[in-house]
Length: 65
Image (tube, rainbow, N blue to C red; front, side, top):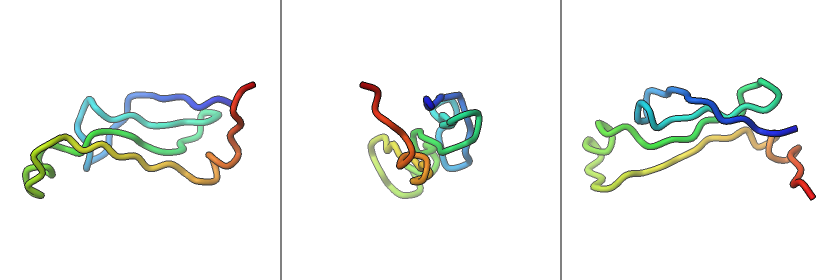
């Protein structure tokens, strides 16, 4: 089954630049830009993007032919 991306939120990620990843309406992960306040605290001068995905979900995925 296909993955779905929906607007999401996470305290460590930038509001409006965060998305939740679903498969069969079940949460599978999150992707987004690191929150600007964390970039400043960590003295990182450029945007940082990160993701977290359940490995079991990826292992079950199939690439369409």
